[in-house]
Length: 233
Image (tube, rainbow, N blue to C red; front, side, top):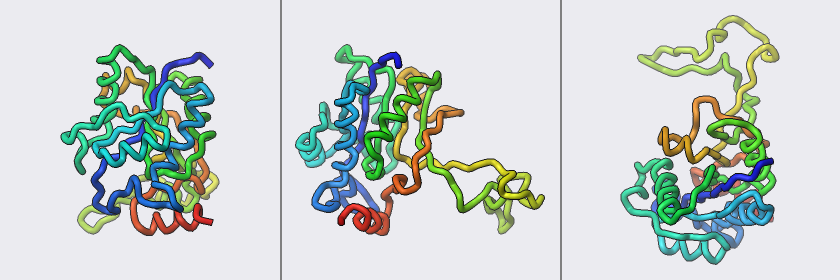
């Protein structure tokens, strides 16, 4: 594997509407962000990464992250830290911050604290897959086994519009395409693509499959309950 310089960015803004202080909420005696920082440090030790940073607008989150071993080289500006701010904004901010210091990264790994069940092997294998293939981006996914393509519709004026032309053709499940759902655990994008397109995901990203049991994405209090039931034993 040819070595390329990579940067992990862990985004953790201070505000959160659904769950107050979501990124640092207590999970089994540790802040939620710990479960993302910890495996990244193991990956960094393995030589796959150059740096792990937390991008936050909160001094409290910054202090916690530093104690957990992550670098927090700056506080993110408030104008890219609101509810309507996009991920691409803080990624470009981080890229520009380092390039202004003469530090250039070939690819960016985005790991959200709301996916706390990924392990360092997931990160390492995803990076390895990305580096071995010529592609602009990679996303982590899990296999969808409950719903097939013929069962998906969108609604307009009380009518259902199928997403698949096979929705009423009685095709056997084994003859249908496999479906994969983005699980929000790992995103990897070349810096060149980010700067040129201002996007994180390319039109045909590499897919890194993860098991459903490590694909929990924390969005509600029920999700937190599931997480505590899994980790607090």
